[in-house]
Amino acid sequence: GNGVRGKRTTPVAVYWINNAVAISAGYSHSAVLQADGNVTSFGLNVRGELGNFTYSTSYVPVFAVGTNGGGRLNLGTLP
Image 1 (cartoon, rainbow, N blue to C red):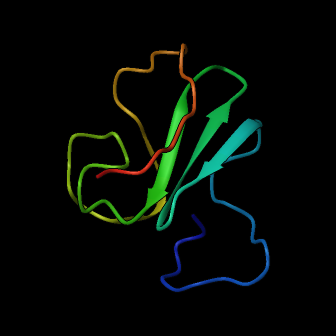
Image 2 (tube, helix red, strand yellow):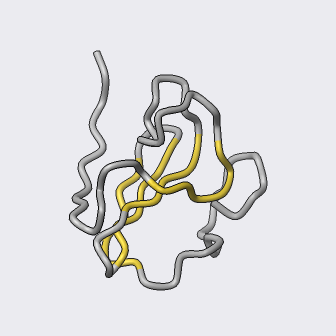
């Protein structure tokens, strides 16, 4: 989420996120629930994991479509 590709072994600040109330991390993507109820996500997007109706990887947060301030987080695994 900081615009740089690659694995991290220590936490880094995520661009445009300053009001997070929850975070959920998958194997190669993460999602953030913001105080206003919107969800942003970043990382690999091979199967549409980011929720923005694309399959494009994003190294900065993108808004998940359809949360409209009522988002919840639950990153699971796909079969």
